[in-house]
Image 1 (tube, rainbow, N blue to C red):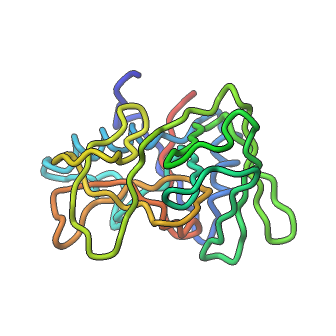
Image 2: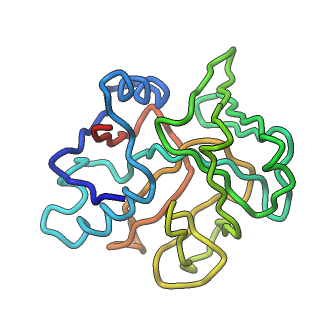
Length: 211
């Protein structure tokens, strides 16, 4: 993967615009959302600089990436359908293809623009072709009060079950469907960055680059 050029990044964050609308705007303009790994590498590069990440995204502390992730609760296998209730009163769901069912402690990831979001009566259904789904095994989960740090998956920057000094994990210990965020660490994690799925999609920006 080529290194992102900061000068080519587009920050897209119209007020009170949902993540779904932002992703459609990006696609219509012939752009793609950056991946979670690209966000991780970008933050790693920018945090030590004089302007830091905020020189790119202003007063925000996170960006929502184009990496969709689907996973079940810890130690439970992926079933036929994974659901996740988000803060904006929408239920996101993903019909799991047969070949990925029964995986345990694994995340299914899909990068933009290879996923589609279908809206229907308070539900958002994630669709993606099986050939575009990447499996990340042995993912680690966030538990309140834990400050341990873990090695991240090389392709997606998702934290794995290997303790290391590479980052702070922040995956909630529940089933999730949605885009990964990348966050600038705040007290007591200044100077760090990590992956999450807290997901307040109408508030935070996305970063896009040309296809």
